[in-house]
Image 1 (cartoon, rainbow, N blue to C red):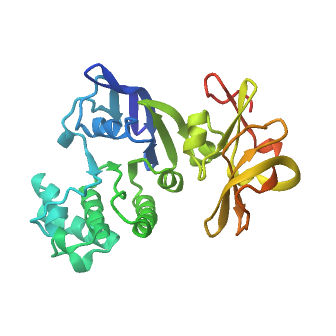
Image 2 (cartoon, rainbow, N blue to C red; image 1 turned 90 degrees about the vertical axis):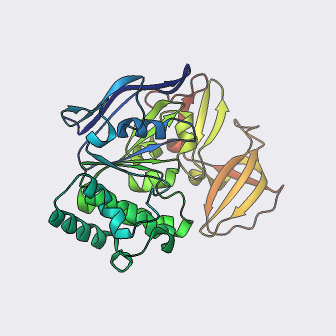
Image 3 (tube, helix red, strand yellow; image 1 turned 90 degrees about the horizontal axis):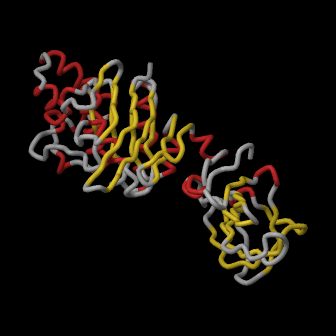
Length: 333
């Protein structure tokens, strides 16, 4: 039996369907990412699991319990928000213990859980400080410690790292993943950032306009995108999509190489990014003549001028084939 099972979940506002009949399941100890662009329904889905919003249809089971209509406090889960949701007038210690005191957990047990959580997130020297005296990363650690101390079987996180700068976000990403593994947490993590999802999650559920576009391992998203939407959403730079007859051919920029036997193309731009150079070009000869803004990612630095000609080629086995009509991946390809 799945640890968390979401079945045919739907949410409507004034005849507008925000979440449309989505289903997925999670095993105990898994790190699952709900991924998608703004407005796709991922936070609404998380809020329905948390009990912060009521579904218009469908069911949510946690273990053997149907929690669809239980109030948040009765669901046995914890939640970490984008805004940290800390009490500004309470110290780090008081913020972490607040939920335990509200549930009247034994005082000795409170101290035990506090000590354990503080050690895990490395906040020992800040325990008597208030949120205004902490950095963004430290505030997020307090929110994580509060979740750890609750010992809830399921932890929900809604874009918890999006307020941090790039360097700190990368550090917290690694810390969070290591923490989840060491504690065996079952975690549902909402993000719009494909890098976060690809680097952290055991399984990704990609939403598009309130529906599940694809779900599976990060590797499956990269190697076998099930639609042109997935192909463009996963990968940086995104996959090139080239109309060709009744089909759309997909090829990732990193799989395109310079080759004198390839298709002639004119350079629109050349963007040096350190480890790689990303080139944008239009194909001007061969079967894909007229294809515009094709991106290729080359290792190292390349000095190429705008308007110059180059020849590009890609291995046939790296091609992805989609239906021009539906945008769906063609079977067996």
